[in-house]
Amino acid sequence: MPLGVPHRTGHPGAPGTARRLRAGLAALLLVVVGGTLGYVAFGFGLIDALFQTVITVTTVGFGEVHPFGAGQKLFTIALILTGVGTAAYTFSVLIETFVEGYLADTFGRRRMERRINAMRGHVIICGWGRVGTAIARYLQASNADVVVVDTSAERLADIEGPSVKGDATDEDVLRQAGIERARVLVTALNTDADNLYVTLTGRSMSPKLFIVSRAASEPAVAKLVQAGANRVVNPQDLGGARMAALAVQPHVAEFLDVVMHDGSLEFRLEQVEVPPGSPLIGETLRSAAVHDRTGTLVLAMRQPKGAFLTNPRPEAAIGSGDILIVIGNADQVRALRSLVSGQQ
Image (cartoon, rainbow, N blue to C red; front, side, top):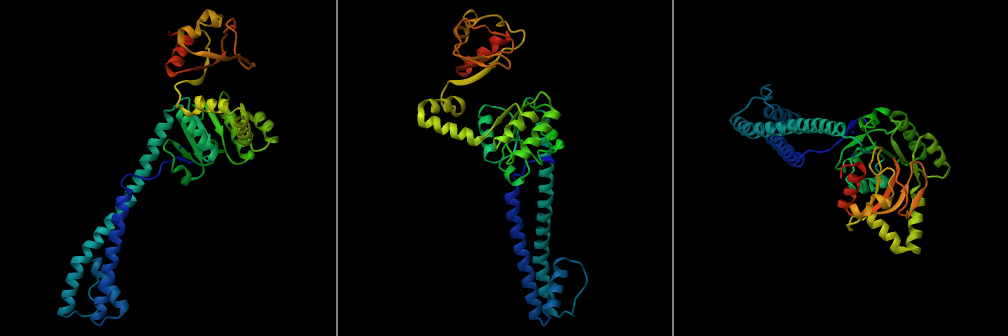
């Protein structure tokens, strides 16, 4: 969820105000048309009749265009009683519409700014297309805080969470999205050139930021990595690989989809990092009794910048910075995180 400014659109009273404004304008138009036709019937020319109606309804006090007889005076009294009230109502609703919209937009931006400024460790998604929308859906299902950056106010209008409208290649825009405090930057723009520039900019602004970049072509992968991307993803390649997996091993592919994204199963795949100073450092999976104490099942281990050790043996040693890939329910994973941090 603003490139330039944090973005929200609309305000609660807008539909009712718009209806009242349309009704007021329609009533005012009827008064002006009726007044003009009335004065024409009294022998005024069309322009003089319209002019007399307008100065009467708006009470500017110019006086009569032509001398009034009794009939014209009675008609003018009726026009004043109906027209002045209608005009006053319409103008008040018009002012309310502008003021209400301005205040709602101003306060909405300020609330959005405060919300983004309070975020720590959030994910910034640059590009709100089909890929960006899918990414946000999965992240929000994992309860991750997300800020969306896009140039289109129309696309951002449908976002429930915080967003920033603007060019993601602009440092000021990324700064408004809280890049210095963000944990991950995802570049999901349409062109490799834009993703490359955002990756380069993001890396220069936050050296420790984890950057995931979208690539549309194979030659762009190496360039994105060189620019600072930690991971580069080609959605077409991933889509093809998933379709192939569904063709060959459909149950395995569907199971992985469910435990990773669907949320309909109690068990989930999670990664848990062993922090420095953890009481598990130097222990083995057997001696640490990870499964017995937490209920989680360790499917793989990975040393910092190392290869995955899949289906690790009970004698596998646990080191500082190791990543444990585990499966378990929410309580079991929570227990494991407490265990590795020494809080259990």
